[in-house]
Image 1: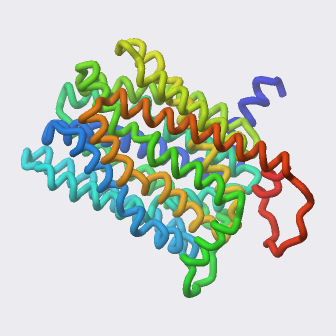
Image 2 (image 1 turned 135 degrees about the vertical axis):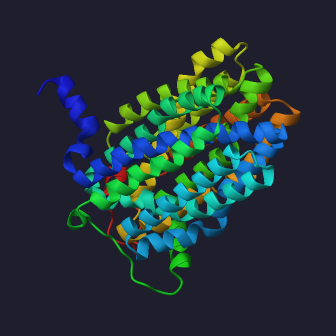
Length: 427
């Protein structure tokens, strides 16, 4: 095999090894493209109805707030029940919510409170869907293929960011935003079809026994596992303060550069180009590490500050791929680190807490970002988040250096059998 062929094989090998993952991958391409279309259209709809960055922050908070309340329960469900069945139910619910939004916009009866209510409903479904979907990868692929599968999923999430926002901008300008919601609602059929076509005998279910206090046990397990606790602390800071792009970039496009929906779609799409390239690059990498996570935080911080300080729209567009690449490197490294470190029967609860950190921090971070963007400007909000990411990454690197320098043989303590990820992270 040629070096190029070997590189391609390493990048996409999870697709070749698992039919179930291929079906899921294809369904995600269709569905997430629709999701990005809805995200752009919904942000523009809120700005049109309220004309306020604070309202945009509130809507984002309502969409992700339920994850804080129900995320741990969703993770417990994922660990105890059939993940494929849960995902079938959540996709149907997502589709119905999107169609409801399409109906009220198409009938021209939409009011801000209706958008808020549907966003909250989406958040409730997301609280169950997210930990189930994240932990489902380990049932579709072998542990050795898990980092590759997570990276390829990241490529889907970001590659569709190129297509979805661009289509949304065209549709909003051409035929109206209602079409974005209709297409998103229909797109969930692709995921449902993929799940139904899977060979259930090829899945590798990892179900925990039904027991009282399963959520508390999951939290205790995460806290006493250093390889989970430390990365989650670093992630918490960045997700709370540094990755509120869904609130600040619409304000950046409209208020800073006087753009329209097409401008917003262009910024998101070009950002997605950088994210896609970085995600495919990460797919060929080996198991992640805490050091790589801290470095990714530093890079994300620098990229965000540079983007925020763009003097013209052209420069902002040119810097968007760098912002996208830096962000997805952090997201994929964070996700893979937790999935590979967690024990199989705990992955649902671990990924639920990750979802609570990743998405559940939004109810706090989004309104803050919206207020800052509204009163101090989107530049200040973006640059401030970038500085926080940079500082947190530097502190993380310093902590890792100190820990390595002080490493001495420790007394044997009671631990569980290490997972593949733990062995890889300690290598």
